[in-house]
Image (cartoon, rainbow, N blue to C red; front, side, top):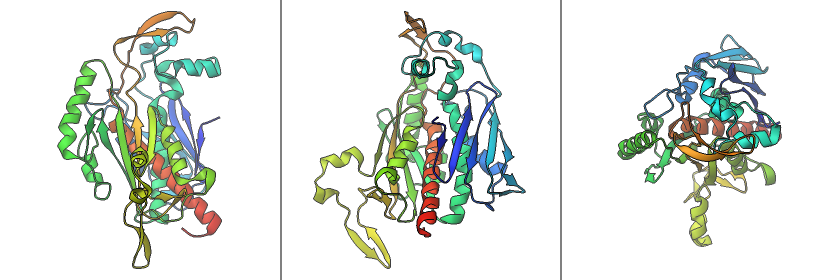
Length: 362
């Protein structure tokens, strides 16, 4: 029912924003992979609320518990279950929202589909659901280190509203991205972006922007023709995240302004390796990786819950008004960075395992 992702490396997330907790079950993880609670916690700490002055102040440590599938620091090949308990719950902040639909949120559509919903924090539609994805991807990251040494996935904030960062996907480092609370790879834009987010919060409003990502040293040959193209699965992964509204790979929409001669990526030989002189394809051709960097961008809308009064309707179909309450990010981008990385690693590992299963090589 839409809660499971992946083909060979499969994850199923569970839990609601203000329920007892959230988590994930991983099936298909190879045995003998070194994984510790500390490895998983490191990734969860990058995603958790309350980590800086420009994100939601909800006070959650997001401490993970490994319930199964890992023994003495190594995966068993059996299902891995990871659970994170909710601690700082305030369901009372959502009493009014139980009967009034938040504009541009999932309240009305959940009622339209299921005939009932959990109004506290949005239930399953809350970004808190992504904890399970990040925990699963922490495991996937360790598998990739074994099966594809040198492969590296990085994401960063490339734009906040109309503030555009200048980041080179070829040279940006994790240290550059994590050195600032916005998680942009352009030091010159950090203060402007922080001030814009803080001013937006003070005004009771929200803003969006773009997260860009790169996968370096990805083997050629991953992905499948037609329905399971690498960029198609990446698009599904990114568009499954809360607040996403757009996806583009390589030249993306900008490529529509070019001619074929301008857009094509000429091949050349670099020793024994086939390379391309440009990368408008974004590392994927015909749905299959060509060994160049995979580069893509994901657009995130402004957070739907804002602290100003808006027109809406109630569950009784009466027109009314609603002012947002609770603790919310004025801009999701800084916390979206590790989530984009997580979903990317899940897709790449799944295709790597599929390639090894079908062709025996990667």
